[in-house]
Image 1 (cartoon, helix red, strand yellow):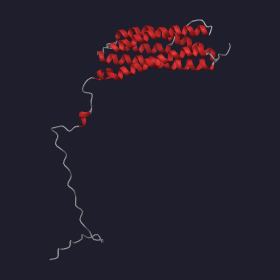
Image 2: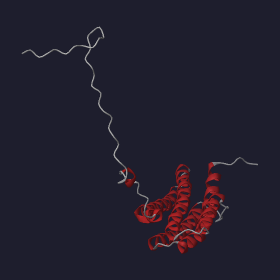
Image 3: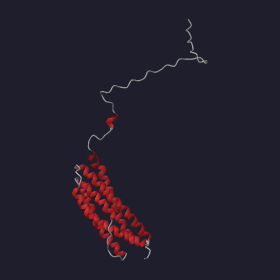
Image 4: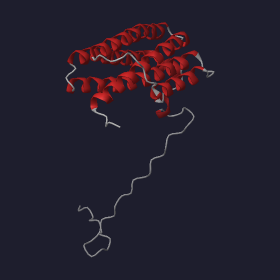
Length: 206
């Protein structure tokens, strides 16, 4: 059996990513449907369209390499999608569901960012510059999608999920019914002679 090379690993990783994108197309449709926020729903729908384009882009890469378009089951993204599906089955309030959907989406984005970062690096070192350029476009899209989800989370979705009464500022204020703490009396030091005996105070001269 021949020993595999980096070229073999590169093709294997391409097939893994191809399957990953196919799985995510189905997952993103469900996530968009489950989103209770219009901006979040639009973000998932926009990235769904991008993902469909990413599948086509990978097919172009296979063509450039004279390789058959073929996927290899991606266990990593399958696990992330399974976790996300479990979250959607939970009985969360709408705001909490939105926050959890963002978390699930970003897990997938980070996985893909790592995968495409590797693919771009390997394509460059193997001399597949045209393929690397196509893969870089996808990597840039994944980074932008992750950034968008972070902006939505930090722009109000996480705050809405946390709800009112989560500010700890009032904890530092003194209760109206709580009496102020008494200060300890200040001790006045008694002057002493050098031998340790108390010193006599001098009488005032007339």
